[in-house]
Length: 355
Image (tube, rainbow, N blue to C red; front, top):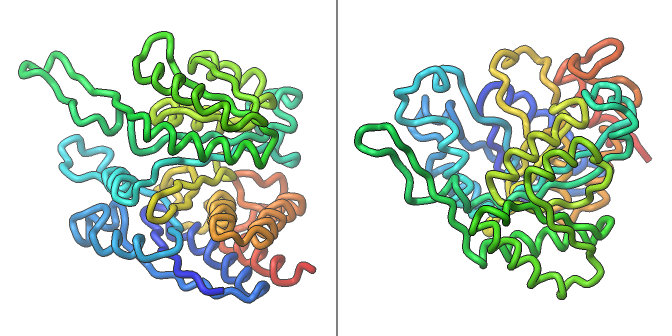
């Protein structure tokens, strides 16, 4: 089969880690008889420097015309440290989400036996933790049109708006994920205070009868924040709104002991974007030492989205094998650390040679 993949490396370590995912996908193509055609697009600070726009129209057209998007990272200190900058790399990410209608962010959280002692949490709390956070991505307070400051600058305001249709769309996806896993869905809101959260809870409750095999639990966000740390193994699939999902998925990321292992997918109406959850890590850019595994696991999610299920599982098996062998980068190595490119080469070779 033939697929067109938009390749958006972005900033910092983005080009290095994306290149390793490309190696791995090409190895998958060689082994299983697929052709992945990767086409480069500008995004982030790199795009601002070159064309003045963090998400140029040419990049958007490329994404729209592709079967999937493999994305690296966005961000650059020269913009972070300039409060007067009128255009910022992160604006490109928000624009991409809006234009591609990336309505749901999927973040798996899983502990690995070889890294379990790297976690700040006790082994007995996290052993066997394996859950998914599904975050609504195009609504809520980040996109509220009514926002600003008073003339004297002493007050500021943002608005949190959701429609029933937005909630139904992302919740259907969450129910589908739960049906394929352990059949438990935790819906997280702040319904005791927020009108938008009450709409979320009412809407999900109305949908529950359509999924009788799924055990649905409703939980306030502050309680959820505590329980994710106290009892992470109790969760299966979590569904929540944009800002809550942003915060909770970052909180959950520390459970594994390394952000360098956490992939994500942003599911869209037109196409979907696959990227690691970590940032651009500019201090390491060009040094061939960044951990590529989160990006490679994001590529596995990309393969899943193309219905290449066996191929995706092979990539995950390769990652497990590299960790079991200790063939990993310095951030998670207990023995000799390997370079970014060496890890990519090892995984590609393992995939091709594995029976």
